[in-house]
Length: 122
Image 1: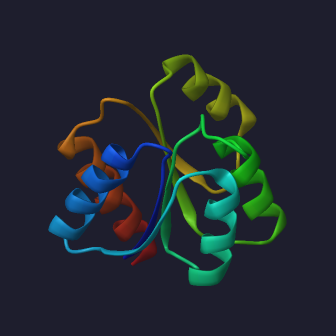
Image 2 (image 1 turned 180 degrees about the horizontal axis):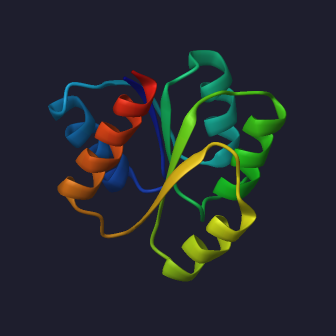
């Protein structure tokens, strides 16, 4: 799968890159805020976007809404350090959010989530 990684932390972006490529997925880009995320998602049309929530310029929820308004079909995995945000996102029923993971996440959680997405796409 083609994956866009969105997080304001360089360390998290690099960790996710390492995990995704190790699992055989192609990382099409990194974004450090919601503005970059929207631009890169529309340009690269990734299969999956990992999306942090608290970021500068435009937060993850605003970016998800902007992508949905643009008709971007990418599936979104929200990865956030704030567990209370996860419940809020689930309540919002954002169309393309397929999973919410709390930081710190495990390799098993990421692998299972990506495997589920691949299965649903097949």
